[in-house]
Figure: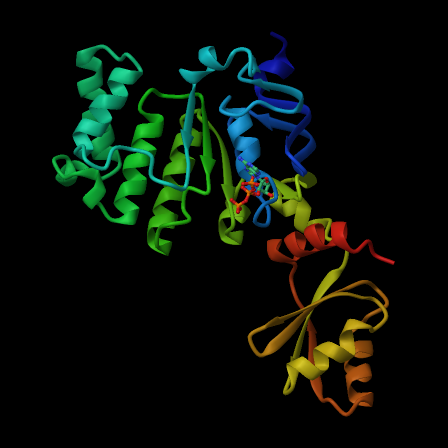
Length: 314
Ligand SMILES: Nc1ncnc2c1ncn2[C@@H]1O[C@H](COP(=O)(O)OP(=O)(O)OP(=O)(O)O)[C@@H](O)[C@H]1O
């Protein structure tokens, strides 16, 4: 294996998946480096789950090549299993087994020697704050507790790579923050992570980010670089009648996007639309407004990247 292959844990070329008429994933070229917490961001139905399922060998691609941790998929899925952890948004452990029994069962599946299995179980119960639930049936745990158990289960066999499909969709904000702390702990200890999410705050924490839209990769870089490369600058427009102002601004020169955020508008504009020009346009229509420049956020990047595919800028 050369240095590049060793430092790349996931590589796909032309990866595609078709379900009947639907092209769920289209010609995806992906490279994930070792040690990344790599985020997968995309609207509903953009192909995140389908890609993750192909990357762990659960789903056969329609076309393209996949190499994960040096194994070609789907041919070498069996060899990969031991080195991969996978967790989905739906709880996939046994609800009618206790917390400790679930971990014991997984240890048996991964063929851990008995003594090591016991040691690992105790370690995970402590690390994921599950000790006092050890005898509780998994089905009676809260969303956040279940998620901690699912993560403990996914890392039990010390995988080199974790694939996580919207792991935080069913938990409260505090549990989400705790979960992300755990992900960074795992990454620090050498585990590479690929995680899909709907949450911008989570995406912003990733070391690198891919944005998918209708099965295609539309952006791929660090969050900071994506924000720096945003085609346009955001402006905030404070105005009494945001809906009316929105109609006036949608067709204004240099305005790429208009979104209403609470009582204000957020615009994405190019250099033609200065704050003064926007305020002037509204004033001409009898609308008083305060227009101020804003700092770009990942949400701006997301909206621009996914919208651009639909309506090419004229
Ligand atoms: N087994 C399947 N049979 C038919 N179509 C499917 C199947 N799985 C996924 N699809 C379709 O493929 C497309 C991509 O779905 P996918 O679940 O990968 O998207 P996603 O980005 O994970 O969405 P979400 O954020 O809602 O989970 C969708 O149009 C979906 O309906």
